[in-house]
Each structure stands twice: as C-alpha cells, then as structure tokens.
Image (cartoon, rainbow, N blue to C red; front, side, top):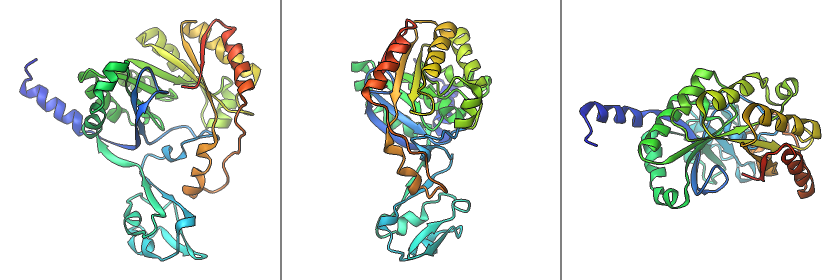
Length: 318
C-alpha cells in the first residue's frame, strides 16, 4: 500500500513515543503461543508481597547494587548528581528516596557493583529489535508479548509499540493484572490478539492485603474484555504457597472463570520460584521479602485436578 505523507508522519510519531523497559527476552515460550519476544515494562500499581520482579514496580530506572563487589572507593559518591550515595562501614549505600536512576554511579564503578535496571527507549527502537526475529514468529505461530511490571501502567507507549507490531504483521499479546481504568484497558487492547490475565486471589479483602489493591476493578475488567471485546484470554494463576493456594481459593477462581468467562478459557497454573527474593537486597529495600517454599509437584498436580474438575483445560507453567 502506498503511504501518504500523513501516514508517514503518524508512523514517525508512533515510533517516537518513549517508555521505560527493563528487559527484552527473546525465544520465550512461556508468554503465549509459539516462539515469542517478551518486552518487560517498568511500573506497576500493585505491590504483591511475593513479587518476583521487584525491579519492575517503580516506573523510573533503578540501581541494582551488589554489596559483595563494593570496595568503598567512593567514586560513586562523587558521580551521583543527587547526593544519594554515602559510604557506610566501608561500603556505599544509596538513599533510594533521593536516587533518580541517572546511572552516573554505574559508569564510574570499577568493580561493577552498580548496574542500572531500566532504560528509556522509543517504541520504534523496541520494534526494530523485536522485528528482527519475525521469521521465528512466522514459523512457530509466535509473536511479541508485553509484560512487566504492568504494561497498562505505560498505556501510550504500550499502544504505540503494539500498533507497530500489528502493522508489521506480528501477533501481539499482553500479560496484565488488569488494574486500570476501563478506558485505558480498551484503548490498549485494540491492538492485542491475546490477553494473559492474572488472577492472584478471589477474596477482595485478601487481595488487597497481599497486593495493596482490591480485585473489584480487576474482575470487572476481565468480564468486559470477554463480553465486550471478545479477545481470547488465557487465565494465569500464580501459585503462592500460604497465600492463594488453598482449595477454597482455587475453587473460587475456577468457578469465576467458568461462570463469567466460559469453560473454553485455558488456565495456566504458575508455580512460585525463589529467583526474585535476592533482588530485594540489590534494590536496598527496607525489610525482608517474604520467604516462600515453592509448591511440590504433588501439590501442583492436586490444584490442577481441582481446576480441571470445573471442565477447564489446565496447564502447569506458562
């Protein structure tokens, strides 16, 4: 199709939209069908006690600090433009309230004790990177998935990146907690082929206790996605032992999915892993993260049977 001058200008404006991401994972097989590239956006309105990507919560770039590598040389103190770093007991320490994530300290650290997590990019830059693997998407039925954090926390960036992918013939998916105004959800999903929707807890009080927000908006949105937009949905349930893995909660989740979304919805049970727990130290967060023992294979099998008993197709893992 011949592009008009207006088309070209629109595409340029779309590609120029800036956002903050913290990872681009290629050859992903757990975030939708086929071989995919998953783009992880920073920023999330939830604060799950068990969050496995705590570096995704804050929108701006952040410093990952490895105290074992720090020699207390003080170069980072001199480089920080915000006076956020000081030397305490022979090692540097960051005042996270003052830190703006400029990354100046990472540039001068001789021991690579400091690394910047998150970078500002344009939708066009990300599209160029993900489009390089389009041949793998075509052969496998894969595509691009936006994850996080929460992609809906950066709606315009998400919209424009998804639009570029769709215009490029790439299948699009979004992994979301669903906590956003319906107007935002609707605008973003206009460019989405598949929704991976998280169900963390069915009880609104427990949901707020563990994530910081009620699930009322989340449940309302997923019903609207199903009934009003008719976009395919995969329900994803992170299994967090001691928090949401009770028989009562798993039954309530399966019952909601069957009743409100239909038994054609595929359900993925996602086992908790401990890989994220060490990240809290790297972010110098006050207090310790929860320590959770991952579910056994036997327990995961039991939960799978419970969900299957509601007539749903269930997979363990992404």
